[in-house]
Image 1 (cartoon, rainbow, N blue to C red):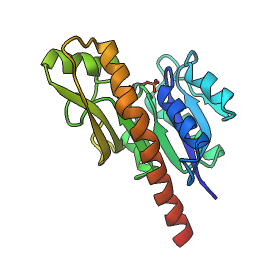
Image 2 (image 1 turned 135 degrees about the vertical axis):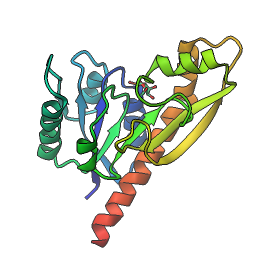
Image 3 (image 1 turned 180 degrees about the vertical axis):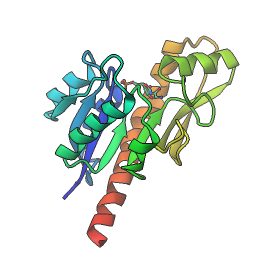
Image 4 (image 1 turned 30 degrees about the vertical axis):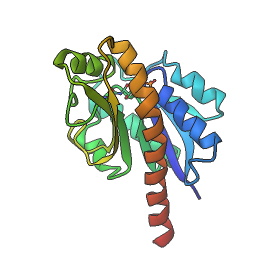
Length: 204
Ligand code: GAR
């Protein structure tokens, strides 16, 4: 039995697409993309999931809804689908310590910088690349890490550097970091962690 993976998304879903493409190439042998959950009704990632034949679920945080209530609905969706591992792929919400403690070493995230630079609360999407350009660093990149109770603070699984060009804009840099780093790192790390979970199950 492959490790059952849920991919949590909020937006365009190019990292989800990289996982789907890796699966289709046979590069995710220990993991099954079992569910895609979005916290945003308009996320194009949901179209990508449906096209790839992956079940989807929407889990929206209602206005004024406490985070704990949102997360308990999310946990119920994951439990219903017997999810064993979670991949955050452009998921724009910070999960609480309580949530994270339910899946120790079983949640991974892709972040578009070389952690510990340009990370933590408030650093997401284009903001990360804008901050790197504003600072004037010459090299940035992407990181895949385990998720713990500290935003972007969990153990690093892999990183890849990307050179910054003189004429980069946040958009051009975002695209290059995705192409040269994120879309390569995330499927690789997902397989590595899925295999680890699979081995734990089979040696139990
Ligand atoms: C990606 O660049 C991802 O690393 C970033 O959002 C983008 C989502 O794109 N995530 C974060 O900033 C999380 N802190 P996608 O929806 O096309 O995969």
